[in-house]
Amino acid sequence: MKLSTRTRYGMRFMIDLAERYNSGCIAMKDVAERQGISKKYLEQVVSPLAQAGLLDVTRGQRGGFRLARPPHEITLAEVVDASERGIELLECLGCPSTCAREDGCASRTVWDGLQNAITDYLESHTLADVTGSDDAAQESCR
Image 1 (tube, rainbow, N blue to C red):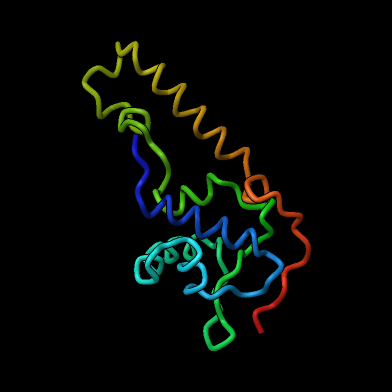
Image 2: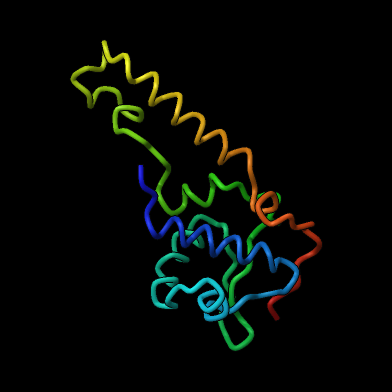
């Protein structure tokens, strides 16, 4: 299994915002510089995160990005789901009928267990767990 670059960068973007949760809106160029990611690519990374409702976007000179909810309310699973549309190790785990060996595949329990372990980990950890943030009130962008 290999996560996409979009997912890895999306996680870095969200962690960066969580680390600065009390700083108001954060400019994309600042995150791009800190994370060593091109601003142009980061624009593509941010779009699905905003569409998933994980980010608030404010346009204009004092605009930027901030988390839509406190870091302790955003799970790592939400970040991955927004970028990857979920993690599915094998197609047969999500749709067993796609596999000709559906009825007698002993290895499927192995992959299902691994899938569940990954999902459980991502769902049980938040951005606050990663950053150690205290989630104090977030400043406005204006």
